[in-house]
Every structure is written in structure tokens, then in C-alpha cells.
Image (cartoon, rainbow, N blue to C red; front, side, top):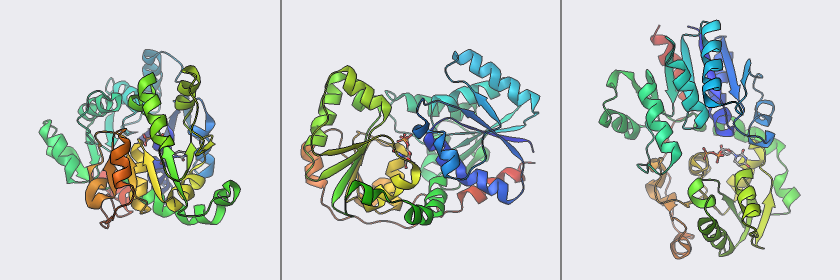
Length: 347
Ligand code: UDP
């Protein structure tokens, strides 16, 4: 098997890390292709070093027109005689990768397949659907995604529910994060005395009115709130000449170890991120998702995650609540191992 993997964003790198490490552990050779979807290194490239991952073998310049990126990717896959190409998640990079690979004879593997928010206003939802329909092998999290794919007439034979690699990543990196991160001291905050906030989804930050509502929601929070701000969001705040509420400790995007520690020790996290909903569940930090839908419905069980839109009253109603966590709800920490074993059964 000649395997290549494609990463473009911080969640791709974090969630592919367990698969990369499993390949290294088993001496399986692979090529890592990196398309720098984000301009800030704290949104992606810094993670290779922090997570002790090998540097990518190939780089695709994502400022190139989409067609050019597809051509370059297809050429790399052909030159390297790749026969299995792994893409992750729902980013534009993953979509470009899948489109490039379907011009060749390469088998496309989609990790985190079958996630559906059923909200076609989200570009991510459109990407997920197209990537799934171009893919030959689908690694899903639970039977929920299996059902979504079967409903779209994707062949049962190609679908494997293996859990989410984020569980492997959190279990693997948390002990090191606890040893190395001093972020709480640096910020002079104590555990369970603050909230964590993240937001970068188009629906919350792209339009002026929506962004004003998002900021009002932050202002309404009753605790000091740590906000590692996404460049997309800070740019919009600047463009619209808005200001950040005073109850906020604003940070540039932070590294993964620091983020895990800030999340683990927060009293509550308010987010529109996909990955953060999952990590909050794993770290048992109650989560409020500032969206009306989620493609991660498993996290809603036991009220661990509550969808609040941008409704301040709903948020206030649910900010203190009893939460129940179900073990192994989105994986048991052996997802990468399962993925590799299943892949080799295809040969
Ligand atoms: N993350 C991070 N530093 C930050 C904010 C987030 O390391 O300042 C991590 C977080 O732990 C999660 C991932 O980035 O694993 C989520 O990324 P993002 O919210 O950009 O993407 P999404 O999951 O919504 O696709």
C-alpha cells in the first residue's frame, strides 16, 4: 500500500496525528502533504513541532487557484504512485484533495466521514457531502454517521465505525500538556474560575449583525472569559470597527497543549468549533455550542453539550446544569489503530 495523507488546518493536524504516529509505530511508510490553508502558523504549522510529528513531504500553496492546487496534488499522487489517499474532515483543503484524487486511480479514504449538521448553509456541510460521495473508504465515528451515509446510498461495505481520532489525541497529549503548559499561571487564572470562548464559524462572525450578537453574548457571560481569537474573527471585528467586551482575556490562537489545559480547567466552554465540542466532552467541561445544529450529536447526550444559537437567555438558563458523560461515546482511544488495521485488510 502506498499511502498519502493530506492536512490543511489545525484540526486536520491534531486529528491525523494519532494515525501518523500509528504508522510510525508500525513502520508503515506514508507521504504527508500539507496545504497551508491558514496564514497564521499558530493555526497550523506550529502543531507539527508541538505534537512531535514529522515535517510534511510535500507542500501545496493554498493561495494558488483551486484548479492549480488540484493539478499539483494529482501530479504528486501520480509521481509518488500513491494508491490510497487519506483526507480528513470538512475543509476546503480536504475537498480539493478528494477532487484531485478522483481524477486518478487512487482510492480516497475519508476520516470523519458521515458527519451531518443537515444545515446546507454551512460550507463545511457541503464539503462533507461531496467528499463522502467521492470517497471509496469511509471511517465514521459511530452508527449515527453510518446511518447518514446509508441514507445517501453510500455502500455499506465502504463504511467503518471506528470512533474519532480526537479521543486518541486527547488521551495521548493530555499528560504532556499537563506537564508542560503553564498557561493558567501566565494568565493568572485559577481552575473553574473562568469561561473559555471560541468562535470562527461564518454564521457567527461574517455578517455585521451576527457578529454584534456574538459579542453581546460574550459580554453577557458572568465569568472572566478567555478567548483565543481566530484571525478570521479579529479581522471582522476590525473591519466592522467593533470592540471586544471588557470581561474578556483576549489571546492570539494558542498551541494545542495550552488549549487543552485552558479547556480542561474552564468552568464552561462556549464555542462554535467542531473539534472543541468533542474535546470538551472528553475533558468533561460543559459545553454551550453557539449554533442551531451540530454534526456531533453524540456530544448532546447527558446535556454535556447544549445548542444555544446566539440566544443569551437560553445560554443563561443552561450555564449551570447537571451533566452526565457516557464512556467511549465518540471513541475508545484506539481509533487510529483500528483505521490502520482496516486499511490493511483492503490490500
Ligand atoms: N485549538 C488550538 N488552539 C486554539 C484554538 C483551538 O489548538 O487557540 C484546537 C482545538 O483544541 C481543536 C482544534 O484546534 O482541536 C479546533 O480547531 P477549529 O475550531 O479551528 O476547527 P473546527 O474543529 O471547528 O473545524
